[in-house]
Image (tube, rainbow, N blue to C red):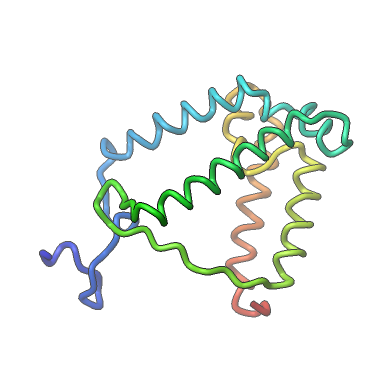
Length: 158
């Protein structure tokens, strides 16, 4: 391993720690645009669809979320069974999770915010891209909340 592929401690770095030029990041923009189009066409960025879900009036969003959970479950099982590696050839390690009651509080806070604003972090940019510019307030609030959590996270019980 060459020196440029080592971190400060001399250990190997993974792909997320490597610096890429702007052109190499173009792939993320293309995938993001593709997902934005899928979100719009599937109507999962629709405020009305989200309100239908929280009012238990429609199965649409539950179906989308359920399919995503199912695809994720199958994908993780395939990764574990066939020891699939990243595109850079790195081993994928899935760490075991431990339950923490803070996950309940965080989930409730996330759900309330989702229900009130009609937006979750994933499709915020797609919503803004469709012309729902009021969602910029939600985006700025999400950024502020993330910043605030980073500020106080060491003081919270984990």
